[in-house]
Length: 352
Image (cartoon, rainbow, N blue to C red):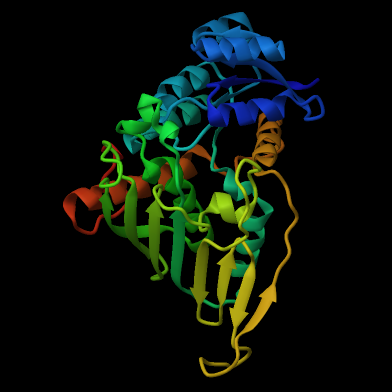
């Protein structure tokens, strides 16, 4: 029997989950849409799917086998506690919470009740990233020395019409770069210290529009990250990876990982070396790696079904989501203090 999955939140990302689950060939049943807006009510009627204003009504009517939470960041913990408390395996969109203190409460409840949490860092499910990870783990670029990431894109003014996107708990560091930070952790190891500066001079909202970050990794490698949602550019994951059809792909690269034997650019999966025993005056050799093309959100939902069935453990658990959130908190704290901050030292502080 197909698993029944409810989606809480019918905004941009919620509708992408809904579209996948509503596909008859997917292998699960979209059992309900939960969202208090009239637009969501009309959308559910259009899809002929049960509609509920809130989670309490959903749980009272027909407890699903799993829940996807795609509500505004500030509501993730409240909604997660309701679902986990009812014993429902839950896929929570990133970030897991607005503060790590709240996230710890959610993770603790899930551990106590033995209910799995998955956090929606879907890029880890992309074969491009899995291939990049295998290249690094193979040792072909040597020991990682330096890492650089770029996340430059241009959001339209109407993106900021919803008030929550202009309030604390939003901002591109939280909404967008937390994905990049999660991948840096996944590919290069834990971050032990950050320094950062940010600016809101372009939009003058309560949240930043541009930021620059320095990382120190547990291995001793150093990293830099440049972020802005006010730049017309081809260099962001959405535009370089081609994983989301809503964006026109540029097939450039947005991450560079440098090691003692060579460098890897992502997502084009090019390994650059001087050859065995080579150095800077010798020609650079490029080796292009291939990767299958799979919709990572669909792969993530398929993984969620396997976790519900007990045949898999979460690729991005609540604990993993918490670790990435702590790095974001450290970035925000480093901006405030204008000094180096270790992830965890800013625990529980607002990340916006």
